[in-house]
Amino acid sequence: MDYAAALLAKLPGTSPRRSKDLRRLIETLESYIQDDQIEQITKAYEFGAHAHAGQTRISGEPYISHPVAVAQSLAEMHLDPQTIVAAILHDVVEDTDIPVSVLKEEFGEEVAALVDGVSKLDQMHFTNRAEAQAESFRKMMLAMIEDIRVILVKLADRLHNMSTLDAMPREKQARIARETLEIYAPIANRLGINHLKVALEDLGFRYLYPFRYAVLKRALKRSKGSQRQIVKKISERIQIAMEEEKIFGEVHGREKHLYSIYKKMAEKKRLLSDVVDVYGFRIVVDDVNTCYRLLGIVHGLYKPMPGRFKDYIAIPRINGYQSLHTTLFGPKGLPLEVQIRTKDMDTVAEAGVAAHWQYKAIDKTTAGPQRRARDWLSHLDEIQQTGTSEEFLES
Ligand code: MN
Image (cartoon, rainbow, N blue to C red):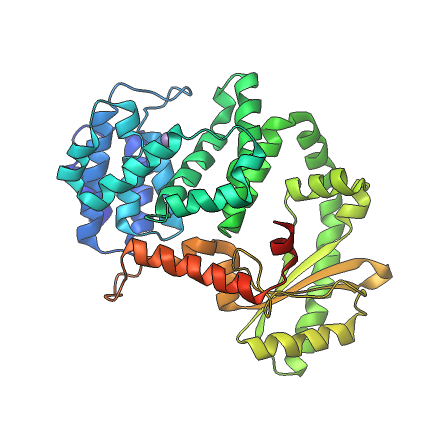
């Protein structure tokens, strides 16, 4: 019997549905953390299930399904065991009579502080976009500097609430969706956590403008078949050119997410066909020198569009993102947007600040949370001082 099954067998009265979610969580955790810490996480599950007993989500599911789902997304980002425990317990203080002091006794100071932070953040209400942006965002970050993981739990919480929004009345859906687009997705963006940003934006779009979302989704589906062919051909051509120069790396066709397409159409007053007929590619190579060499090679394959080249390697974006960007005239003059970066840069591009939190069981030198949060912020400061990044000027 594997470890997950052994632990599950020890839990009293878990319904099949609940143990399925927990089993999945444990399987994810087993890939990167040690058994004794997984035990602490199942203890949190028992504790949480007991505390929320009798409560249900609006969908009718037992309440514990929600915090377990939140823990699941954080586990997929390989966050540390304390964050996972805090995610499972994140609504306990807010929604049950259990005080923070009990969490401190049961799970330690760090977990209690995280849960306390999330509960306090819940009480902060931003009324508009301006409040959540630039300076005030920075202020919030500084206030939270003690632990950025609080914000990560909050973002994962919002993601799960958004993906279970169907159960809510229409009016509430729209309000929550707007708040997600105006506040939470920009925070995910600022923290550089791309997959969270994309998921929050697409869900926000879907529930704020259900009709536009449905129309756009259908139209995109129609154009996908022919698009894939073109992407495949161009990828192959780049790959061959790379092999000739003995450059090793991966070429990916990039699909744009619905909300980014919608935003381009709305802001630049473009037709769907103008926005969709832009092909995106991402090339990941071993080191920085190769990035620049490869740039020369793709510029030899297809003519670059004047004024579209951006060197975010030398001048990173405000959230730490690094990459070379260029736009090329592809076959039949179709624009090809190409991003070239190293593996490390690619990790940062997807995980952002979460990359700094990824938990490594063997790493004994791990600095405390405050230290790491400060390192990250000062890293951002450095970036900002070196740059005239357009984003920085804008903000
Ligand atoms: Mn919650």
